[in-house]
Length: 193
Image (cartoon, rainbow, N blue to C red; front, side):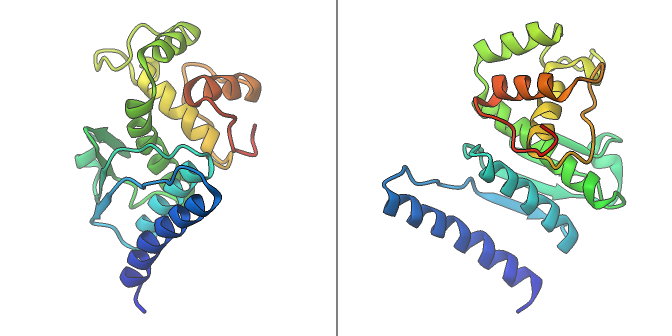
């Protein structure tokens, strides 16, 4: 069986098994968001699959349908390593280490999750706590945008503690965990917490 077939089987069978288990146990079944990838090799798909699995393990199921496009150059990501806009994720991590590829997959998926799940009250509270004025104003430096800080904190809470969040200033694990809980309503799954 080739890698493409194996990935297709895993992406198809896993959600069905989870839904069947949920129905058996009387829980509300999880309906995974449709995911389309393009330009991915096996390592790229592994990073995206790992990131999605971390959301599942954390119980953060409610993702919108996503298109993930992987690129060889950073042009598609405006010179960065990742970009999220309207259910489309562009990852430009082909030359990055595995830990950075996974971090940026988590970060961009975190934008999609936050857009779908963080209500205005939580957003305002998060911005007040972090002392940021804008949620997603491109005129504001990247680290000072609420949406980027939220994605970095969710990424930290779901990651494996390999890469520190890029924030305006470093935070202790307890503060990061509190902000993660504010955004998601649950405790982080990272061992760094």
